[in-house]
Length: 259
Ligand SMILES: Cc1cc2nc3c(=O)[nH]c(=O)nc-3n(C[C@H](O)[C@H](O)[C@H](O)COP(=O)(O)OP(=O)(O)OC[C@H]3O[C@@H](n4cnc5c(N)ncnc54)[C@H](O)[C@@H]3O)c2cc1C
Image (cartoon, rainbow, N blue to C red; front, side, top):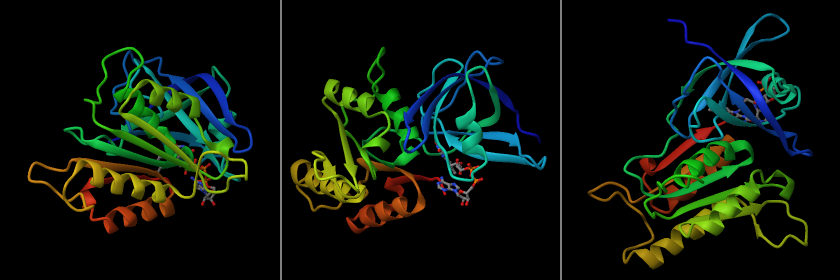
């Protein structure tokens, strides 16, 4: 059966980083009153290439549900088809898509959570954070600690930095850690790969919250913490391996790979 295609109209476009050519894109679906999805899901954008072939690419939704609107965070890929098509869109122009799709969503009941992202892997994390800690509306985090560990090479690639820092300043249980893998000497923040900081969080949590060993093994009632990882395959694998090495179960680790 053919999938239902929707038309999304670009309303607003913001350049998040010039060097990385990354854009924040806000879309509206005129034919729907409400676009229902679960934070963390993606849409499949569809367009014809210059040879008349239909091309489909997935893009994580970078917002929590908001009437008939959704946001994307897209960076140009050199020689790429769809990323450039999206980044070249101007307000008023449209793109077709189907969805929402995907299982990269917060596990219920909600547990302590570590969000781990690099690059545009931050997109679904923005959706999670908007949903858990809405600006106007009831907090859905249930007071559970939430860490966001965001890694990039350069500070210009830390997208939505101000937003996450603001939420962290306002909510005692949201912790935002950004780390650079190639910082300049004067960089005051964290350095190194995300998995190093994730391991520290896990070890510290085990020391302070739990009398048992560092491992966070399955409990009879289910897991008390999950990790959500999004980005390129190498980073996802490095973090999964690290957590499994710390005694985590595979089911505690939810991930989305972009490549
Ligand atoms: C579930 C899911 C969610 C995604 N969400 C996002 C998102 O929120 N934002 C976003 O920017 N991208 C996202 N992507 C990646 C996106 O689907 C495309 O792969 C990406 O935009 C490149 O497509 P393209 O048509 O421009 O490049 P293509 O024409 O498909 O490829 C051109 C060249 O670039 C290489 N390439 C393909 N993808 C990447 C990449 N991601 N990084 C570096 N090189 C690449 C290819 O190997 C090829 O050599 C997601 C992917 C998946 C599977």
